[in-house]
Amino acid sequence: MSGHSKWHNIQQKKGKIDVIRGKVFTKLGKEIIMASKNGGSSLEINAHLRDVVAKAKSNNMPLDTINRAIKKGAGELEGVNYEEIVYEGYGAEGVAVVVVTLTDKKNRSVATVRHAFDRHHGNMGAAGCVSWMFAKKGQIIIERTEVMDEDEIMMLALEAGAEDFNAEEEMFEIITSVETFGQVREVLEAAGFEFASAEITMIPDNMIPISLEGAGKVHKLIEMLEDNEDVQDVYHNAEYPEEFEG
Image (tube, one colour):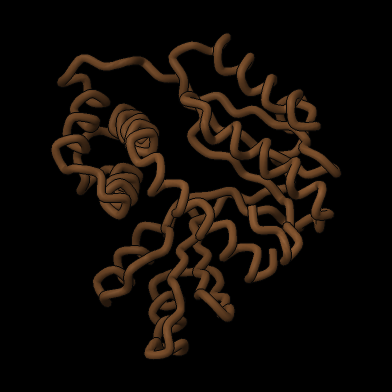
């Protein structure tokens, strides 16, 4: 994905988060519950929970809301039993789409995800039909400013265990393995850097350049999926044209 497309997607996502913060808190709460349920409620021991809590804090999620979600996952408070289900398919112009859901009602989630694909010129496929085109990685994005020292950030990230470092016009992108994501994030945080985003994500092996018309269709599909209360994350390999504003 070109640097412009990555930055466009990140800005778009952040703008949306600001508009629907209550819905984002619900999604983050589910993620914290699952992390606590699967790995325990200790931030010192459970690295995944530590990363998710850091993500929640970066989105200004209140500490008492975070702590309640941890307790629900650990069984200390009554909560909903969520199941992670991943759906895959194609959007307009052959764009690969992976949809990660956390739901307490499987029939509802599959019906609403399928409806989104059908409505916006896509097709939902079988498990594994497109996920092989993506790699699960840690991704840290730092918005670039004139006072930042590119070499300093690169050396900090690589010495902390990052796999790759990309300097773009508007940002620095640090790629890590899932296992080293937490330690790289913590080193950069300790050095005083703030993140435009920092998360475990699915990075496409190759991007598909699409037309302006196709970008509009894919964008509407992604928006409808992200508005779904069961959907946690949506990943795709569309490279939008530079003139597309979304």
